[in-house]
Image 1 (cartoon, one colour):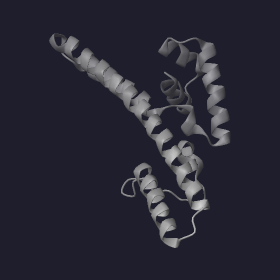
Image 2 (tube, rainbow, N blue to C red):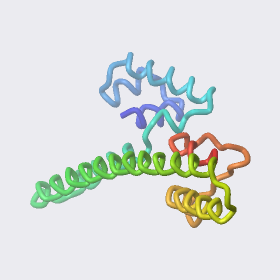
Image 3 (tube, one colour):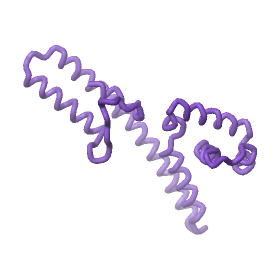
Image 4 (cartoon, rainbow, N blue to C red):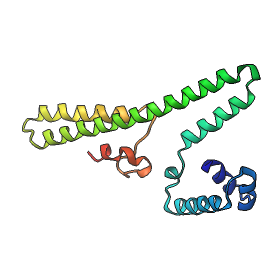
Amino acid sequence: MKYKIISKLIDNQPMAEIATELDVPYTKVLRINKEFKEAKEANTLSSLVDIDTEMLDILMAQYQDSTPEGLQSLVSTAVEDLREAKTIIDSLSDDMQLAASSITTQIKNKAAHTVHVEDLLVLANALCAIQNAFFNKNSTQVNVLNDYSGSKQYSEFLGD
């Protein structure tokens, strides 16, 4: 819902009209408008709305609306399964981040006490493998020198 409201605010649609059209309280539109302006000024728009979830919700609603009546129950079940799968994947992502963080901490500790260059090379390779797992060079560019803050959830892996 937040995504729809922000989209309409960007299109300069009046707030009262947005509230009426989307059937939400006017105060909610005011609050989201305030959050949107603050996020825009602070350059943190990416943290304001979870675009992946919003787009999934919009697409699923479109599929359900365009499905013939005979298949509605089947499509509804599939949509719920997809939402559940996304929740599971999100939690797995959190678990993977915790595991990578733990391994990274161990690598840092071992590197601080390493005497031989060969051991340091092995640790550096392990750290690179973790970074490549989170930042696949074929799909994501990471500018370490400028410490791009757009992906704060992985920033601890960039500081090494």
